[in-house]
Image 1 (spheres, rainbow, N blue to C red):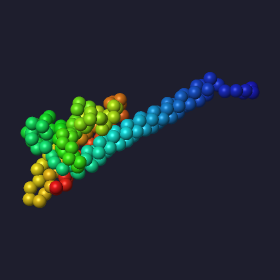
Image 2 (image 1 turned 30 degrees about the horizontal axis):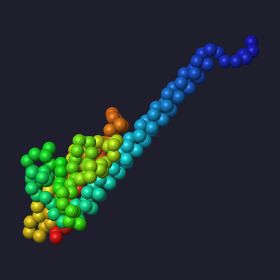
Image 3 (image 1 turned 180 degrees about the horizontal axis):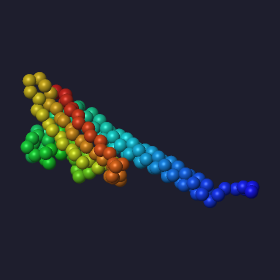
Image 4 (image 1 turned 90 degrees about the vertical axis):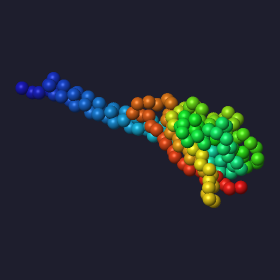
Length: 170
């Protein structure tokens, strides 16, 4: 008897083998895309937070005067972390009442401009002011944590920055 083809069992084995291979390959592709999404999200959030911190650092480092009135500038309130979300200062041109404030999801300045984007959520923002003594300049510590608003679950990442800004002595 001459055999001209494949038996049903042989065909089924090949179909199952190809199905398993396609499932494995699709899982690798899906995991790769998830990793790319998380990486892009973290990069964008980190870029926005770095921009906000560098803008704040430049302006605060050159500030002529920090407003240390606790009723105006709440960063001098060491007891309540919820109140330490705003710093008021006189800029290098002598213009008073400049400020940076953490407002719900954004960091804003005195003009109402957002230093962070619409897709970035500020989850922790603590501004601590320390009056300098004995030749040590005043300083401000910024503790920020942010995440992407549009991504959740295992793809969501959190970016944290903690920096100390030494102010110039005038």
